[in-house]
Length: 435
Image: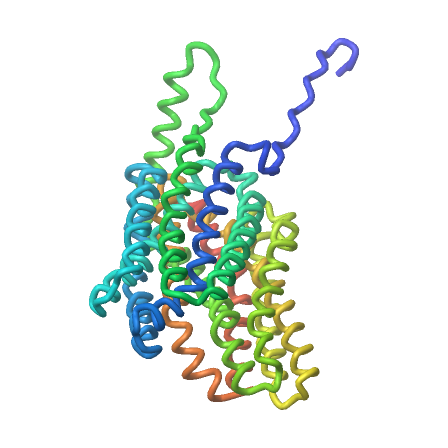
């Protein structure tokens, strides 16, 4: 066509920026996560000492309570996700924040062991339900084409908050008094209440309707409703969606990397290597700093299921390589062991940021739009299982067997990573058929 006689179309608007000051939804979510994360970082730093020194429970009692709480939390995510689909993710999050604030505040006066156990179960279950509800909120307020990049940015913000809370907790530890510990616990609880302010300010989701011409609005709306109803009718029950459950299970396996970082690696360093004990804290600092620096970059280029599956596979293989490196630190000189462990944490963190960037896209793209909350609940349930069972399995089966144990764990991570792409294709095909 002749360009001189054809109206020149207006240029497409630039893609919205993910800077915190430019997108109201991302800005609100970032504020919510930052406040929450500061409270969580503070709590994680002081809670164990408060439970043992302040409340007077033994290490064995605390370990038992946290194990039972982790098991109780496994079924919490699915009903929270279903509630978000039925009502509203923001309303569900308000209730969960109130529950968690109350449970953590009562830790300050939990003189009864039974009360301590009940509070731990409520707080841990609330944490897992909170993760599912936030996942549903992300699905409702973040456009699919920007969701992965936004989540990468939010995860970096979350790590900043955790670091700030841990620094605040270190100052509390310097005082080492019951009053300081009790005040820190109460401040952690208050963070859940303060987070309700940015949660309230997050814009409500506004589904985008297709473009309509005058006189066809009713017809278009009817077609849209019919399409959604058809998708809902043909979608399998979430707990019978075998391909999605398989992706969830593989993701849960690779998510055990957090148990490696927080439990198995410190124990290995302290009991089987000659590296300085102070490195335990510094390795976590290295991990946190790298996540902040690399998570957004790791999410670039992930625009669909295929790219997400490849990123997940790459991340899982990094995690497997890190396990081999950790095993190699045993029997070395202190300096050599320290260098190997730092390198292992760098590789492990590369696996973390890469696999997580892929995991987010898979969890949303493979779920039907009408049931995002329920499917996020399923996905978070898989993660809850790995977090609850991982510490016991790693300490009982991996650490006692040394290099052989770490090699077996590496093989498990690698198998899950290599199996994921084909499983994701299966799930994507099932989702297309359901439409």
